[in-house]
Length: 254
Image (cartoon, rainbow, N blue to C red; front, side, top):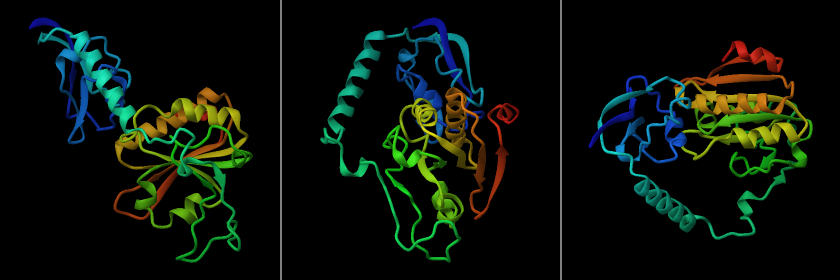
């Protein structure tokens, strides 16, 4: 044990987004019961890569007695994790059918007009997971792009009619998926002619990670694309919309 600089997590401020755990390359932080916890003190190098990732400012430095940083243990844990991920990876070197990009053409279904309750699904392409979609595809051309949190379609009963209709749909969950969506979303926005962008998220704080990734991707793309955030409340089949007609206006919202 020694006196050294180490991170401190305020669990009362933590919103459970998990971004700090993703930013901690050493694996010192884990999400337990919806809160970030420093579970491996000897993995923490005290450099604080996790601090800027936290949207709630729940992480600070402190100097206290703690185990010394163990680089060898960190590398061993990283190697074990990488080996486990490789073992669990689907054995589909050429790509599985579920991730094959294709447009969906629905005969007899007019997506331009609202459909009655119980109408067929209005999904226009496959796949939909951000991790699986291609960065370039014909269906992106002049598309209205919807980036939606996984839970939104379950929380809002008329999601196909009010959100998916006339949109190319991408879904993800920053709390459950590993890594950051920003780079891939930047490529999609920069390399395709996207007409508009809608971000659909839940009211819960952890959905903020998806919104931040999409907004940062729009910034990185350098394009002036009209965009809006549609927030769905939990427990009620309703939402509210915040519109941003130009890229530069969004700064006032962040």
